[in-house]
Length: 594
Image 1: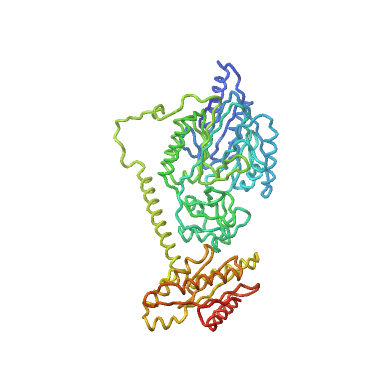
Image 2 (image 1 turned 45 degrees about the horizontal axis):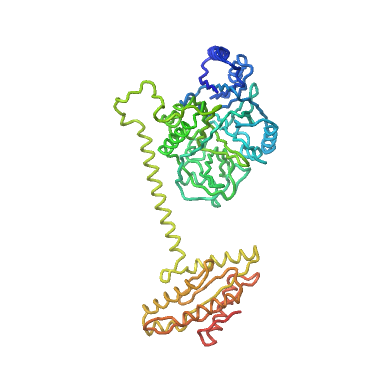
């Protein structure tokens, strides 16, 4: 496999360059190439220019497969370019290619994915990998990927979503002389000899508390977050206005969504009139997320780690499909992420509106991610290690370091660390406050507010699933006399001792709390009234036999009952009080169940 990368300046110069390359392929080669894949990355969606470049390739190399996409930035020989057209020519010795391209209307994505899958699975020879390009501005690519993965595929699928330089209106993918503004292109790399290695990494770190998407529309629009208009999170946390600059202002702050043991970036495209947020990839009700921001230090460290692993793999070509937000974040230092890969093998790619990778029954639709794909034909050659990575031209080891170089990256990294630390401190404090809000200060048991919440939850669970639960209402006997005779400090000690007995006498899923004064309540899910009465009797015995020092004897009375279908919390508590009063009338130190 040979890789040739360059930039199209003019059509005549490009055609001349192609003719020279075609001549080299014919001279001194023992075998004719098995296939030629030309990838074109366009900064513009100008159809006349796209057709001229494509025609130039197919005129000189009519046997080539030509695919491509409009971009949000181009990568040639590891360098990031803008407003250019990059070509990448892969010449294979033992690999054949099969290209399938099709259009679809919004709503037809799943069907198109299934159709493309069927076309790929018709291939009788082994598929080493599939290159996938799509138009995420016009269709729901996540649904298309679901269709492709349905039934399972036994080869890796990788690629990127076409961009349009942050205009967010119109992107294209190309297959030979076909341009598609609403659809996808797949290229099957058919070979027993080709080896494909894929890596993904993010480098985006969570900044905010965890939030939940509570309502969506059309799979890609979050309408509510924690019950409020979705746009409020960007206006509230970041002061981002709902205007034409929303995409550029929010680009560096994607949602980091927890789903299926993955952390998926979700980049916003625009807002809707009713305060919703339209995303490039899918969002779902119930998705847990935090707003994130990129850490340049992490990004550069990830790039070096992947470069080192690729050096062991020995690829003959490397392709990068990397989210546009990474270029926006890193600015002039973005090549600190992309250039290291050129030290291993010729590297080309583009900045995307979504990165795609998967195998088997799941293909992930990423945002804010770097996707690195290395490939080679045949056995690996000598690994590229730190000892053999070539020096950059003109490098002078004696040159004095520029102390100001990449300073903004260090500043951003320090700010990220500061925000992470402050966020962690706030979350710890919030957890403490939440615990205090539901805890009785004296006894350490739950307070009445928490008990009200638990009772409401148990009634909802009963109404939905028919599960039974019981309550025990307890009251320390003659508590006023303890306070009057021995003092309030002894009364407090009795309350704490009683609470310890409760705490150690109930199950993990039971809830005990101080209802008020010397009254306590225990909620017992999935429990019959007989079992609850046994628990109350055990507690009564332990209380009566306890050692209370100067107070000597403490007893308590208990009312036990099961919740009845259709009964409200107030009705339940009224019956619990009646059972407790019955125990008092019985002579105290007693258990009465209903």
